[in-house]
Amino acid sequence: MSRHPENSPRQVAPPPTRCNCAALREAARYVTQLYDQHLAAAGLRSTQFSILARLKELGPTTINALAHALVMDRTTLGRNILPLQRRRLIAVKRGENDARRKELHLTPAGRARLEASFDGWAKAQAEFEGTLGKERASQLRDLLRVVVGTDVRAEADARA
Image (cartoon, rainbow, N blue to C red; front, side, top):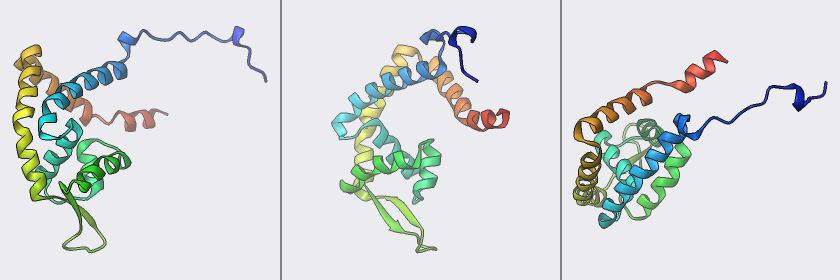
């Protein structure tokens, strides 16, 4: 059976302003640039800040657990931790209870770099909230947590 484009309904691209993915990615790039600008003085990018901050919160953890906590692909996280390892801000060590398990640890240098970045983070946070308003920024964070907590991938798989 051959396909005849003239017989099939024509697909029309939706306007970019209606695409949830595009809107979220554009907003993420905007916010990332803002935070990167303020974190640069401490020698970190926003992704690196997030990794160090979450590692501080979790304590020693596996790359899989950290990737899950950051809602990141494991291989993407792996690429992002390499510069942090080279700079000795994080270390990979064997697990205390299981030598086969590799754990990521925040080093003293990593903790110091994270603490040095708090001022830049606070400035970025204040600038963002100054533009959007504290209440709307708080509502946005709450809404984004709902989005992250909703596993739309699993729901889509269930419908297929």
